[in-house]
Length: 267
Image (cartoon, rainbow, N blue to C red; front, side, top):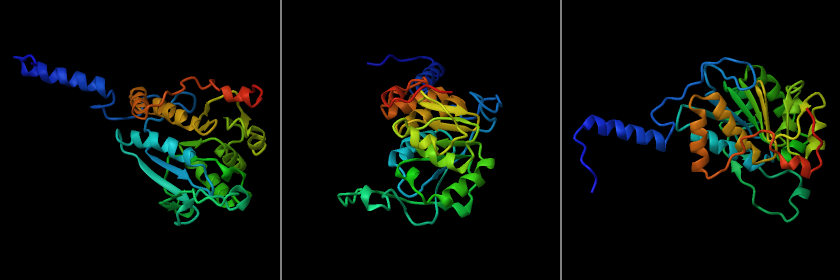
């Protein structure tokens, strides 16, 4: 039998404390911290609200839906808007154009609903660029043009895996520190000779440019982004990690894949 509390006010206070322990972010509106710095762990006074995901043909599914799962959970704590961007309003395809990359004629390539074309120019704060087979496509003209035009107005550019190769080709990452998939290191880094490529690195942040290593590293980057850019970010990131049962890597330099694929330390 539960004990009877004679003081109703004490009961309400107790319940409030318990709820805050269960959900650290509950009961607190999400705002940016007060610091206003341009790089490192600084964050804007107004946290980013509008995320856009670039969807080039043959993008990697988890490059998009790994970070998207994390940011969708954040959207339950604060208002966020989402734009799924492609050349046309037709569903974005994950299947490659080249038959050689689908030797068994599999029909195992989902399509994603598009909300905006590049020409629509939605006012996004954060642009997420995924990789996959798309990064090796010779036909990225519209994507590169969009990135170039959008970059000056962005608060942040986030690249996932070989998405760094796509963004690097646009030129907007020149002079920034960044990382990418270690298995594809030589091919991707050649796409941005003026980028300061970093290894070992699970993810790298350099001012408005954030980049992750291989596919699943995008989840760790997204959690770190929340820790830094939103008030109560650490508590929110911990709650999200628990909900999706993911053990996040908290040290950006923890990267066993660099050694595995013989990528020498740099930058």
